[in-house]
Image 1: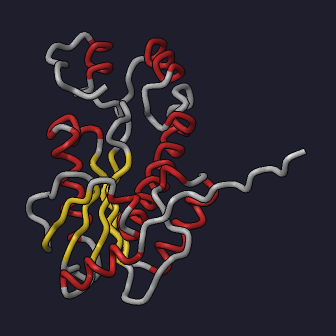
Image 2: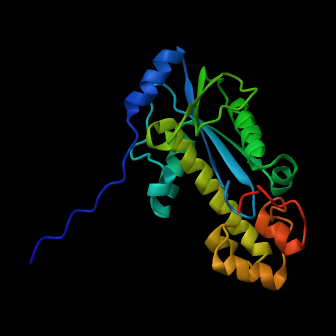
Length: 221
């Protein structure tokens, strides 16, 4: 009988990426990432993380490739050892600004909320928010390249999951603790039965259609 294949480890960002960014910037570098752009309900959560010079957390990787248990363990270590700032953009802010602008708004404020102002913010994705407290650099697939961005992805993901679990206590019929606000079949069934909550994003097409509202074109969902 052939031996079982060894479990594959999730890909890790290369620490050299962050070292090069720090050298380029001439000082501290933070990573910025978000969780929750796609769901139909709940906030989008943005985290900014700066590791002090010489400090690292072993095992940090893109939150999407980590198990919940590993994410939670790394979250605790990151917030204990790094400079961390978290900002929420509520569903009402998302509706007022649109999801992209609300996310960029939260990114700007997350960087501003760090205890030490970084020299450079590495932002996951293709956009650099206006009004950052430092220089900014967009990094596509940044959570697979930068340790600081990957750490921010973990903090944002764990924070948002916990918020959605707490939300489920007030709205037990919706299953927020399971789907975290994404448009799953269970979520659609709950919406059809009970209608949207105050936490649902009314600018998103599925919710607008459910409410019989016009102007849903171009909205995620």
